[in-house]
Length: 118
Image (cartoon, rainbow, N blue to C red):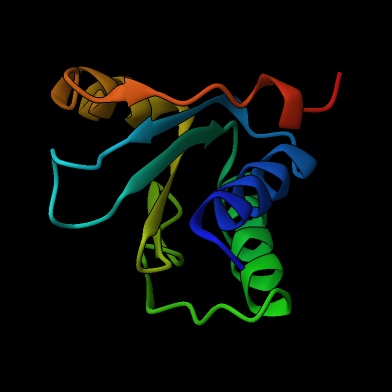
């Protein structure tokens, strides 16, 4: 599976659990951590955990190893590290505080609209 296919898998996974304000940042040439960040949020602890678990499950079903998952129990900011792609699943209250989109403001936003449910 290519990087773009994994990105599509992650975006569809978070969308399937009704994550809000889904953004994919192209981090190539900007960050050594990953090539893409997928950022989204849920409105409750349970939803944040469901979104993160769906990312993990769908990535594993596609043959990708989840390198690590941090913050799952607290459900305030769950980081799912898939190597080339890192998913940041925030609780609504935490997302604006950390504001990763502004922190990485020089990153291009990927067009993911076609992957989202209407």
